[in-house]
Amino acid sequence: MFQISAYGDTGLRIQFGEHISKETNQQIRSFCMLLEKEKIPGVIEWIPTYTAVTIVYDPCTVLYKALIIQMEKLQNRLSAMELPPAEIMHIPVCYGGEKGPDLATVANLHNLDESQVVSTHSSAEYLIYMMGFIPGFAYLGGMSEEIATPRLESPRSAIPAGSVGIAGEQTGIYPLESPGGWQIIGRTPIKLYDPNSLSPILLRAGNYIRFIPISEEEYEVIKQEVDEGTYIPYVEAFEE
Image 1: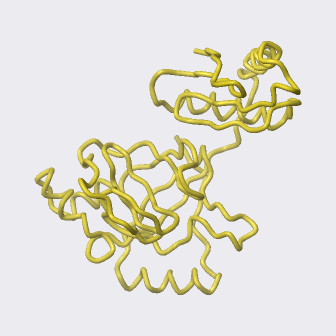
Image 2 (image 1 turned 180 degrees about the vertical axis):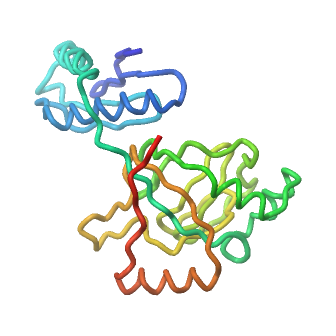
């Protein structure tokens, strides 16, 4: 699928699929790489989503019909694009207790022990489909439906940075303290967003993460290393 439609006076939307899938995501990432490489005059920015890319452009620089022709030319080059090899990062998480106040709720909803929820959540390899919402937030795919849980009926006014939550069939990590309605099952001591770093965003679309259960003691040790700037996340090549 490659459908182009107008998106207001200064935008167009390119649809690559109707359902969330790894294949659609690869097409979207390849297309965004071409946009970055070509730097088409008049194109201001592009926003990738699960199944589409929105292009924001300056109509005083490039006309809508001319931009469509440019997009179709890029589409013809997609098959020749090679994406960089994927990596998988291990994210340490302290589950339950004060750091995961909703772990029992998730377990009870599915008639599971808390340890079974942790095992299920930490056994998957999660593809990072895209980044957004707030700086450093990764939209992940790959969580088991066995632990899918509705959002809280009343969102919390403040969720600590590093909190790991579940909302429906999605799981994610809050990179900053913010309001939210996700079911919080744990917390990671590492920083997903650090504005003082040369690379402020830790995660990248197209890579994977795996959650690694840790104890309270291990959490404190890693947190101290993070605060001191000595902690290095474990990363390895991802193998299908």
